[in-house]
Image (cartoon, rainbow, N blue to C red; front, side):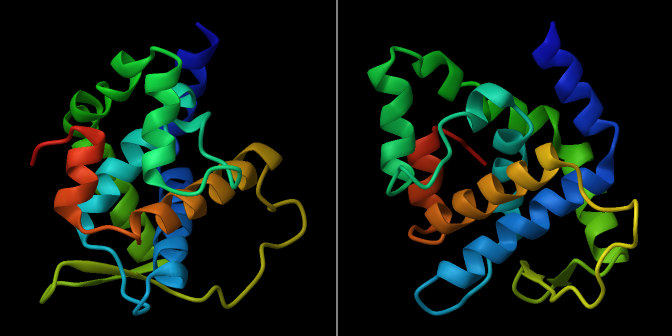
Length: 167
């Protein structure tokens, strides 16, 4: 029951989702061969992963890429967890849109409607005293950047194929 409570707390805070999407976008852009930004659709997949402890657990700098992430589930005979990304992506559409809206409103992301890409913006000011991010949220932000780095190595159809997601 603890995992469910953590997930509910995360989704009841769209600002945390906005921070995770900003971190994901930053990780993607910083590591893309051409410095490009991710298309908006990738944010729906990313947030479905980043708001589930089981899907987030294998994300670390100890893994080289998205293929290694997928293999981690196959090696442990936990492919059913990986197959959970598709329904999570669909079920979390509204929450992902809210997180994107908050990220744009707070100046974390900018959406280019011509090409459908989200761009991370540089943070101008630091949080004031007593308003710093909690350790758990910071740790999840690092994982979001790693996921962004992995996604930046592939195009959308390849990512969808690896993660068994259909749009």
